[in-house]
Amino acid sequence: MASPSPRKSKSPKVLKTPSKNDETANSISPKSSPSKNLSDVARRVRECCASWHENVNKWSKLNELGTSVANKLVNLQLQKQYTVGNENTLTVEVEQDMTFQLQEEISESSEELSKIYSSLADVLKRMEALVQNFIAIKKLVALKTNDREVIFSTWTIEQFCDTCETLFHSFNNELSLKEKLMSEFKHCKNRDQLMVYLSLWLHEPLLDDDYEVLLESMLLEAELR
Image (cartoon, rainbow, N blue to C red):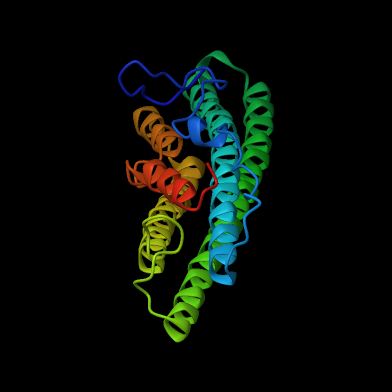
């Protein structure tokens, strides 16, 4: 069975192997809002931060599902190449039947992966909407006081906006990579290249290494941890 090239000791050969985002995906949900009264700005900021946590979790789960489907797709592509490469040992009729069946399964898996990609794109749209929400809150703060006012403990609205935009750009870059990988999964015939593409889908290299720290810091600052 095909599997992406392991990164150090981590091997994605077994599909149940957690992705690098599992810690975030399986983390405890943000705690309920404290009973103290919050300003309108603080309440809106907290709601946006909680939504960020929810969307990152959805992304992580979709990425795991996509890895499983991509792994299946790569295996089918390799089986197809093996069948074509061993045509001397198969009758023409058997080879045609096997090739047709494999191609049908490849098409089905490709369609399934496309749906997962579309779901990831929907999550990204919600992330982009959160960026706009933070910008709107920033304008509201500027009208009422100033954007250097601390919202909860130490962060200003400017810091929340910057963190939100950084997170969005990371996920946006990663989605662009996944779009290219989908095409390669469908058409690439080289085993080594397919392994690299599968590993890229799993490990999500275009997500900044500190994105989990940024997200956690934002949740802590909004008193959701």
